[in-house]
Length: 171
Image (cartoon, rainbow, N blue to C red):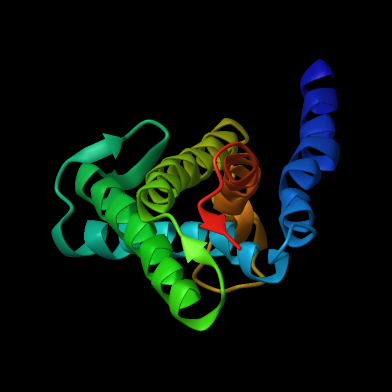
C-alpha cells in the first residue's frame, strides 16, 4: 500500500515538478532559447547512446537495470550530448546578441548528459521493479511516451539550476 502511495506521489507531483523547470527556463531572459538546453541534452544524449551502443557496444553497463545499455553507448551519449550543447552555443553566438562562455557550456553538456543517462536508468529501474517492458504502445517500437521524456525529467531541473548558479550566456 505504501509503495503505491509513493508511486502516485512521484508520478503526480515529483515528475511534473521536475519537468516544470522547462517553464522556469522559459521565463528567464532569452528563455525561448534556453528552454532548448535540456531538450537538446536529452535528445542527443539518448540518440548518441543508442546509436553508439548499437554500432560498437560490447560491454554491458548496467545489466540488472537495463540490459541493452553498454559502456560504449554511455560514452557515446556523453560525447553527443556535450557536442550538441556546444554546437547550440555556436549557433546562439552567431545568431543572437548572447555571449557564450564555452567552458561553462561544455560543463553543462557533461553534467546534462550524465543526468540524462541517470534519468533513463532511473525509469528503467522503475520498469524493472514493476515488471513492465514499456510505458505504453502509443509510439510503436519505443518504450512509450514517457520514454521520450524520462531523460528530460532529470535534465530540465539540472540545467535550470546550472543556468541560475553558473550562467553560460551573457546578454
